[in-house]
Length: 246
Image 1 (cartoon, rainbow, N blue to C red):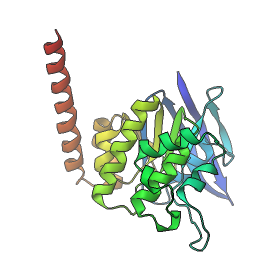
Image 2 (image 1 turned 90 degrees about the vertical axis):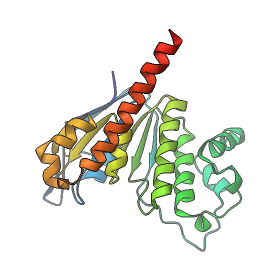
Image 3 (image 1 turned 180 degrees about the vertical axis):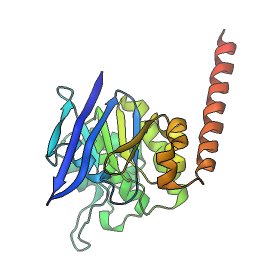
Image 4 (image 1 turned 120 degrees about the vertical axis):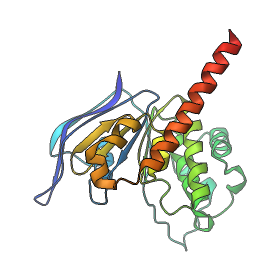
């Protein structure tokens, strides 16, 4: 069963067709990643899926009672406004202080609760945004380019954290990403978007698709090789574990 589905979704803004005929679904525990060039409608798609924007055509079908946690692409905070991390978490509306502490520990910011949001590093700031989104204990975690502007170690650390969150909460993850190598390593399903769905499927399938290569070039073999290497390594490890257990 799908947690959320887009059915022939279309969005028109000011006479311009941003999205057309978009079909997608996210199932429980899946990590689904949307990739595409700038201006391809990725953020608009996420906004429609979470209910922040109405579609012009088609429909979004959500599982009854679906809890969604959302991490936006950017959040501007006035440098002059006093807002600690603890206060930021309190703004979520979840009043359970113990839950705040647990989530802060989960994402690695327990020692930063008294820090001003404006003083955090890029990686710390994104973790604070993630913590706020996790307070609702989402069934679906939606992230819009959460690692934009982060250096490579911070990017790798953040995506590893997302995989851990998925396992801890048993939730699905839907994200927009420009980190193609990470997409190939971490995703169960990839959607290539350019106003419409150009292609979708497993990372291996999408990487080989002419539509994907037309958008991102032919130099993505390295990303695919990394995906295959890690996938094969995990598969071999699982088989070895199974034979040991037997």
